[in-house]
Image 1 (tube, rainbow, N blue to C red):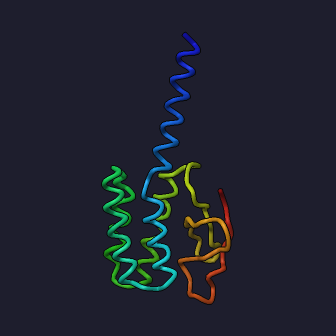
Image 2: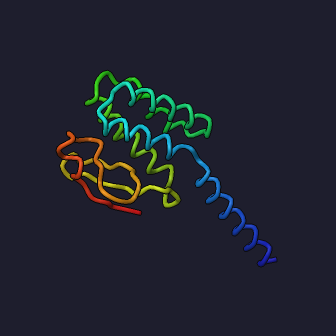
Image 3: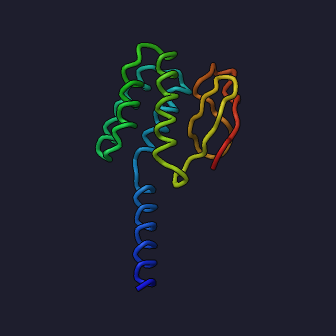
Length: 137
């Protein structure tokens, strides 16, 4: 009986991990971050709308609401502020099963997700893009 319970729990854990890996939230989030790096409000808004749709389809309403806030920002500063709340929601969504690392900017006191490698801070001017550090894998 114990071995059946252990097997059942193990299968659930594997399935949950596979589902997290199949999400489109991370790729959509990264598109928003890249648009912020380009300082393109139109691209930020469009990418955030797409992320909101993806999040709704995956029943991640908190992520969708935060993406909607980014999509309706009136300027790049407001978009960056809303992106901080979106980043917190996506970090919380993914736990340790995310394909991106958590980065932190002490100057802005904000976190974001990005692929491993060189820091590319979406909150600051292009001359400060390398400001930040990886906080968690």
